Image (cartoon, rainbow, N blue to C red):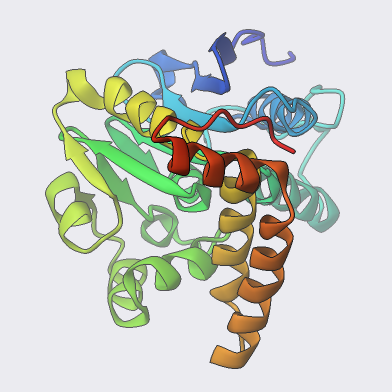
Amino acid sequence: MPDSDADDILIDRSRAGIALLTLNRPARLNALSQPTVRRLCAALDALAQDDSVRVLVLTGAGRGFCAGWDLTTPLTRRDDQPLDGEPSVADLIAGQELFAGMVRRLRALDKVVIAAVNGVAVGAGFALTLGADIRVAARSASFHVGAVRIGLTAGECGISYHLPRLVGASRAFELMLTGRPVPADEAERIGLVAALVDDEALLPRALALAADVLRNSPYATRHTKQLMWANLEAPSLDAALEVENRAQVLALKTEDFREAAAAFAAKRAPVFTGR
């Protein structure tokens, strides 16, 4: 039977400039079936086209952020019908690419992505947090590679790419090879998350961070995100400086920069238009 969780991805656009995307399978700790991932990818594709949204806050309903791949659900075809018989290698590759695609889409967004992590973030769920630009954790949060403890490799959905860049290679090796959970307080200590808050303060803190981002010009935040990720791959300081210089020259020609300069001189708050 097809997956029946038609409301497993919730999007709230009621706040100006902010979209709140909630993984909504709380009975399964928001574990990801293939149909759920397809709906998540479709939601991210739609958000990518929505210029009214500048910040995406990603969280999970109930007690967990995301428990990773839902092993209790069958592999499905593109029409969400279960596969017939044993999956082929091609079927398995398609499944891997489907899950990887959600992280690729998250990273490609020209919006700032804030992960508000409540409870467990396991496997592909952990990968979603790593693909965000900013992570805020509730005290109940914990981060798990997961797959290495069930006979699979720890590298999935970009974990082996993002984790060393966020916490360093040495610590990433240890976490990925042992598969041990990382509790919220350790996640803050090693720089995996930007802030640690009580559970009831998680969403307010994430939304407050989103509001802080919105105070800056659309060009500034969009291009700062782009150059930050680009310069994590820069082969040299000179290459990084070139990326920065180009972005800054373009910024100097925007109406928003002129507005910021005028507002500074007039001792008032700037009013940015995104031009």
